[in-house]
Image (cartoon, rainbow, N blue to C red):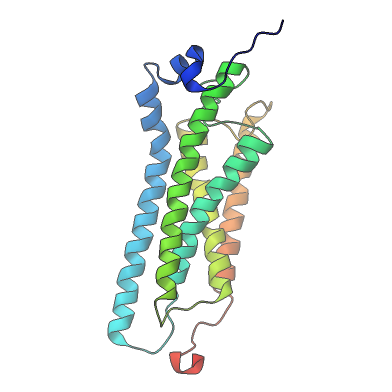
Length: 222
């Protein structure tokens, strides 16, 4: 008969012991280091946007403000970029998992342990998406906010690139939690290609966000 080994954490001791071992809290802190960088970026962008918009409102130039929508789009792009990374590289392609350079996902237990930490990663991405949605909702309540599609698309591409760069530099290069292609013979090439493509995405996002003239007055919109 074929032995059945449940994959759930609560019913498989080897998986549970692999997650909640002496390295659980160090792993948690290490994984959160990239998230802390991204959270700082999100908070910084939100703060800058709020100050700039308040300053523009006090001057009352009549021009539409780019900051509210661009900031919301960047935050949404960071969250959805994380989901893109997790869905494509972690799940569909299975090139790597969250801790695959530290805990190889080459057997049943290793794969399950990495799946748990992938879940922590996705939970963070979900929180960021919720923040982005709330910022986007505030844009709908801001009468002098520019609501152009180019700002939305360009901002989301920029946010996606910011996620890739922060996650790639932190997790791939500095902490070495995983590589883009964990089981490739040339891991460095894949890691640097990932960063290079991310820079191109950032440039494209910024270009798209500025491709529309924003010197439109609120009177012209009415």
